[in-house]
Amino acid sequence: MTGFIKSIRTVKRKHWVGKALLLAAGLAFVAPLVITLTESLRYEGAFPTVKQYGELMITNNAALPYFWNSVLYALVITAACVTLSFPLGFVFAKVKFPGRNLLFFLFIIAMMLPFQSIALSMYIQLRDLRLLNNRWSLIVPQVFSPFSVFLFRQFIKSVPSELLDYTTLETSSALKVLRYAVLPQTRPAIAAVGVMVFCEAWNMIEPVRYFINFKQLDIRPLSVVLNELPAKVYYAAAAVYIIPIVLLFLLFKDSLVASMEKFHWER
Amino acid sequence: MYNEQRAYKSAILALLGLFLLTVLIFTVYGEKIYAMGKPLVTVSPVRLNGPYDNTAELDLAALRNDENGDYVYIMSAEQAYSRIEYSVRYTPVVVLSKTGTRFETNAGIASYNDFGLPGDGSAVLTETAPLKDGMRVLWNGSGRK
Figure (tube, each protein chain N blue to C red):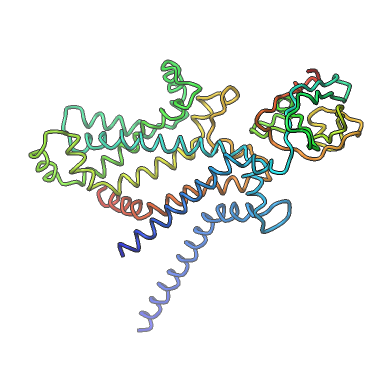
């Protein structure tokens, strides 16, 4: 009996240690966000005050056009990427053709490549397509995302093949099969992939450094400009930059969690 | 449960919309709000007298909206870009108090020196402000027009 009580105590102690560790890790993750929001309420020693936001929005609002650049890039990239990746994921998941596995293997490899290693090839490609130094040079490279295709493939694999067979009896159009059979089953996945692609586009840095000459045409997103802002508006700008992502997460958190769980289960 | 979720999502969407609308309003009207109550003038026909002459002459006839203005904005965007490498679109503007048709610069403030405008203190640098629509760069960094 004593041994049993001891073992319960040990388990409880371990439980509390785990909780404490998790709490510490959680605080470490949240700290930058809290510091940013707190510091955004400080202005020339005064606290709390919204003067930093006043400075950012009114007195020196030159950073705001960059915010809209970010919005534009993130929306266009997300829409285009989801529109392209979804049917591709379907093809890899449900359509049988020779070389499918090899092609998918190549996709996986492309997913693993760091951006820096293919930046020069992309630069040459964009130069030949005459897309350098304009907004397309920031949009096009991010639209073709092997990771999104991979995620969609994993999600669509879970759609029952019987359902697709039944739908193909009704229509011969692949688009209609996608629209009426696959899409309703994978809505959370679309939301999840959309949010992930949006975040990636929102935080883009490398393509801006490689593909545009901002001294000729300043079309940079806020992600790149943020660290060049004066200290007196930096934290307010960072808070403004964070808010859309936080709200998007709150909006789609159920879909994100459900998709991740499903993805984990399917895997 | 379903209604609660809907209400939650609607609230978040409303917040997102409100946030974007606020940023949009300040993007479009921020400078106008800032300029409220501040006289704005166009100073295109200003002549800076030279690299070692800290005076600038202004053709008042070419000024707009300056009848009741107390300040004249002389901007130095290129000069600022070249001298202090201020890479963000924060365009420094030198604001001089108006003393008739002749405007003299002042080196009383450190950032003012960054603009390379030495002065004798006859005019007071009152503030800096972002570049306004309709204003032109007058100073090319060398002190010559």
